[in-house]
Length: 140
Image 1 (tube, rainbow, N blue to C red):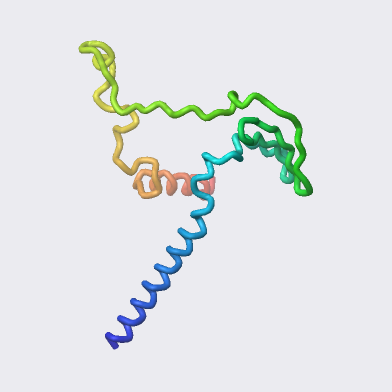
Image 2 (image 1 turned 45 degrees about the vertical axis):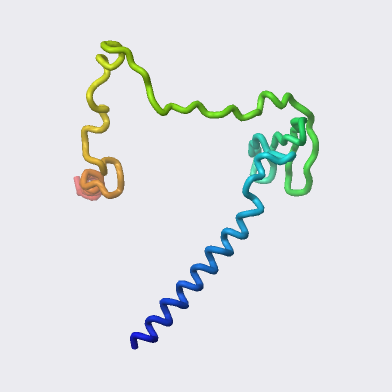
């Protein structure tokens, strides 16, 4: 009985490992495409079957119309308007003594409740839901 259970667990682990390796192998060709010569800078869906996309090809930005049947060149635009700027890192903040720190409260006003407030696991959420349903289902 134990050997059968052990064989089933080992077989399951092998299958899970194979699935994980296959998922990594399938994902790999699409990783790192941001530095290539062809990059989609922006895309706006117009309807269910049509969209407009701005694509960077080498050093040019092309505006493309995309439908289910074909892709057409609508024009060219300035590439600088679509370049992605690096995000600003905010690791720390310098505050002068008696300046901004004196006006800030000790805690954020929304953090006065528990850690689960607003989540599905919060007792307050369930109490409010039951009260709402009770209001909706009572006869008046």
